[in-house]
Length: 193
View (cartoon, rainbow, N blue to C red):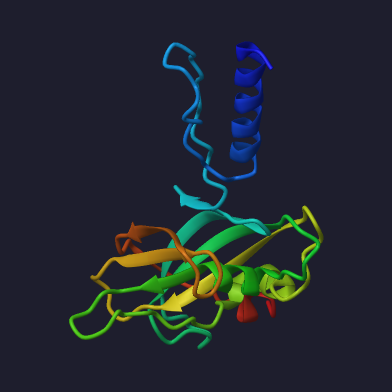
């Protein structure tokens, strides 16, 4: 095999390793005057800006709201509500609630504990989301849903942390400063009028 064919074979092996997700150093037998440009592979799984992407699903946070207790009694605590779109990228049984909970947890730091927030009741104004939240999402299907967390206080920022699976590798986090509190809408009485 001549020098040129050997170089092509080495570059082919390197390319297939990189495409397969394995990052390997350049072969040591390559000569210094042989130039090969290798670009780092994009991260497969991430949480950037407002989007988390994993192998089986993608979640985009569409809006974040801060709600005061509702008049209908659905929520008796201040809450942070994440409105999101979730897409099932696989043939697996994924619903909006399980998908969110497999990726995200919310925290409000305090002096004694990690400050993990409790999932709260979904306010009644989100009836459309409540209706689909536990239904299986078809492959490449997208549904809109919400998750609400009960706030520990109204001053400490909320940190949303994303992981790959329930206890998996950290993908990233985003901090949300407490915003203006809105009154949760009471749709149970509005629909009766």
